[in-house]
Length: 415
Image (cartoon, rainbow, N blue to C red):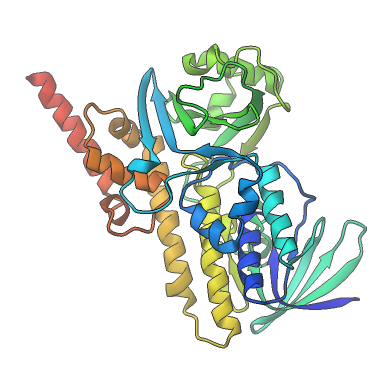
């Protein structure tokens, strides 16, 4: 069996894998990516956050992405029964990027992988990892290509950025259920012929349809718009027919989408995604590190997926470089803790969204501009800024603010 030697084997050619591979390659390391699927391929997670721009910049991807003319994104809008809460990233509390992109991920992910290839990273598509044997930090990975031909890759370190594939967690039984409730999504790309140009297409819109049921609306620069319903699986059981018939009925049931998306053409038949949340106890081991969705994928509501993927890969790549140079790495303090910091902050906001806490905050009268700016920074992905009280106290600050708003409203009603 043929054996190839590399410094670092990266599993997965999505944003997580491509960012890590590019950063390592820029430092002169021999890097190989193996990817189970053929690119381009469809995936959700189409609305990026400003914080991921730092990682994309360090990887050397910004120019290549800019050439694709993706839709620029300057904020996020939340809608409920006609009420609007609009966040503009320029008004955020944390210094940093105040814009990003909304992208069709098939094209976006292929752009990153192609750019990594031009840097000298070898990418093997339609290649499945079937076994990994660790000998200390070194490893031998057996892979199989689309023709069934097996080969081995000897690596000094492995970065698993395989996303939903979760290669190392599945091979070594590291998976465990997420604490989040199982949810389902039904979505499609629409020909958005009635798009308003007043406050779109430069932001994502999240519409509160019913308690725990919401809709994403993500306009692209091509004229297509991604639309999806997300929530408890029982909601979807109330609609009969084909996926397209169900989806059209859902769009008609929401005043914010009924007229705009009535009789629109779908780019593909509406698709379903469900039971996506999963996690693992350890994000690293002797000879490997997990990045991106392999660590934990939360929920699409705050578009955290690509940001957590790219930032965790950015951090992991730098630590792998230290490791390969013979320097000591404290994976718990330098990787696990900061990665969990980001995951935990976003998880608090996801839970607050579905519990209705953020409804109270977002749609309150006369919001405090300073507090709104601090929350805006979280929505921009700056979930590592401990000077922000809505990051540092993410598990209590939102509930405390919501209670204050509710009390103030009651007092106003009495007066």
